[in-house]
Amino acid sequence: MMKKHLTLILAAALCAGCATGRSGEKGSGFLQSFSEGRRLASARTSLEKGDSAGASKILESIVSGPAIPGVTDEALFRLALLSLKPSVERPASPQGHQLLRRLKKEFPASPWSVQATPLVELITTADELKRQNRAYRITNQTLSHEVGDLNRTINDLNKNIEQLKHLDLELEKKR
Image 1 (tube, helix red, strand yellow):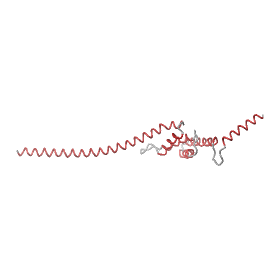
Image 2: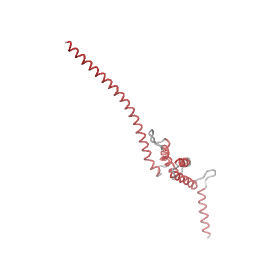
Image 3: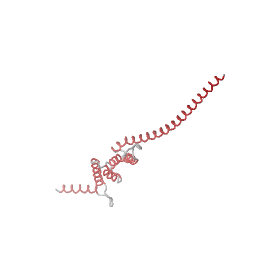
Image 4: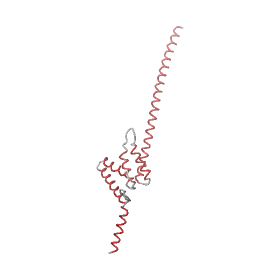
């Protein structure tokens, strides 16, 4: 009986030691990880219900707090996906791209970072293609102006040839 009580007291002391933090901290260790994990689960539930705005608020508060592996990395990934907002002007919002880069930097071994890698590569490739497209558009406009100038020159030369032919015919008539 004494061994059971001692084992229970020891287990409670160990758990309490993990769950308490330094004075003045919001929480640390196991308790904070558990609490943030529950908030992440709440964000997932909001996403499943289609409440992107509610999920974003929860995820933003998680990623702005202390880094907790297994929680913060997933929150960063999910928030980045919600923040990407691709459009014709840009393949991803700067905020979404920054969140993915932060995920890869702070949690390089995370499975969420592994999933973020192809997204970052796609965004980078899309940005490069967008830049190339702009450069080609400028080159195309320049070439269009040059072709227009060449066409005008060709038209002028054709007129001059016609005038020379006409003059040549008149000279032949006078002979």
